[in-house]
Image (cartoon, rainbow, N blue to C red):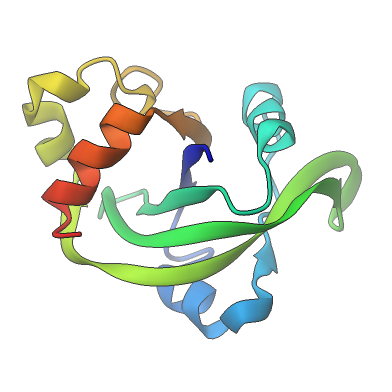
Length: 135
């Protein structure tokens, strides 16, 4: 199983909206970056990820799961997306400043590729961040 991080402006699509989508989840639409699209192509049903509020908040706020492999994006069939369902909120929000302060996470995509909206998270990074989040 692989791990990922999904960024969303809470004004556009928030953690609360993801939760309200329930077990049926939602398409992760609107991604118009080739690297992010390729990351979604690599995902498999059952992969887990962090739901990250970008913008002013800049923090991991929840855990999601891929419930459908990559398929054409319903908002633009030239692009692809996966479907995600909320798993649970994190007990402790993990801010970008907290991530940057941990030297073990210096090579994390979130730190190095700050604008990439869908990014991989290594097993080691996942374990560190889960501990930071109280999981």
